[in-house]
Length: 481
Image (cartoon, rainbow, N blue to C red; front, side, top):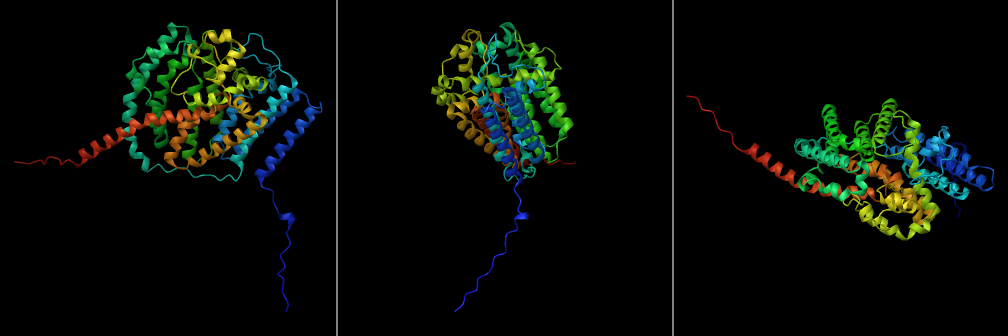
């Protein structure tokens, strides 16, 4: 009895390819590991580590543009906001605008320097976070087709009706806000006297004024006619201009990026770089003008056309992460309380009058740095990097960043469905603000959108019933004599 063994063909190792995503990950990890070892050995200075961190962040932004749809992926916008809010001061240092970007000047009259070990930890967390956000989006990336909106067009007449009816209430509410702010200390009234600011507006006006924003996003997702899209967006920002003049800017500017992403997703075409550059330039100029309009705000650089000063100013959120890393024991007992109250940020505005420890991470950092200034209404926002470090140190930063990356990938995959793209539009503004926002701010925003859309859904049923009844009613016949 004999047995015949089938010889397997030998592997041709010369033809085996390393996946591009794996190669990118390997190269980035080698760079981070080599830089860390060089820093521990004393061969790499803090300034050199800053330059390497900026180069890594910039490289990931470029790679996300090249490999992930030329800007049609949420991770591209997220990495850009991460560079701005957490790496802005580092970038300004590389451009020669700052001498010590890691010194903490947030809420302080005189900045103070941090130790070499803290500097290394901050830069390592920032680099690892950017890398861990990018990799889940890059791994096995598959481009999704543009969504079909044929079935959703039937909602447009109703949405335009609601938008036209609620927009005057938004104008009136913003006007009352602006008038109260002008009479009571300017922009700082948002944080020192918010209860009276809200009481200045009738309840019915506040409730109906909640409708234009979600309706605007729905129209932008469902509509394909550009002239109408331009009209609804211009009308919304025209109603918000008075608040921007008082100093509010983060909400409107994160909202600008969302329609840009939705439009590029629906078109399926590669966005033109010059348009993105023009949009960024306009936003920088307008943001600087708004900052100059704030009462008593001391910004770095007073020129409205100074992008380097703008980037350095926005990068102060890195100080929140630094404080969290330096004094983690002071904030770590409140990590669960932070998450609980972050679910309420779209429903309950926390100002200095109702502050208590553990309510908001950014407020706790502000009190820690300068309680006297905080009592006057000055405060900083949060930073997901700092919150992530409180949960588990560097391992916590890695784990939460991987979850954020997986979430961004999910948002991209959902963008191929027109109704799910509307959900993405509700969530994306808060997601893009994570580098200077809160870990669960996006969930609070989504809950608020759903609560606002519930009565709109009932209104749609009533509207649809009336329209069908009118269409089904017999028309009177004309008789001729």
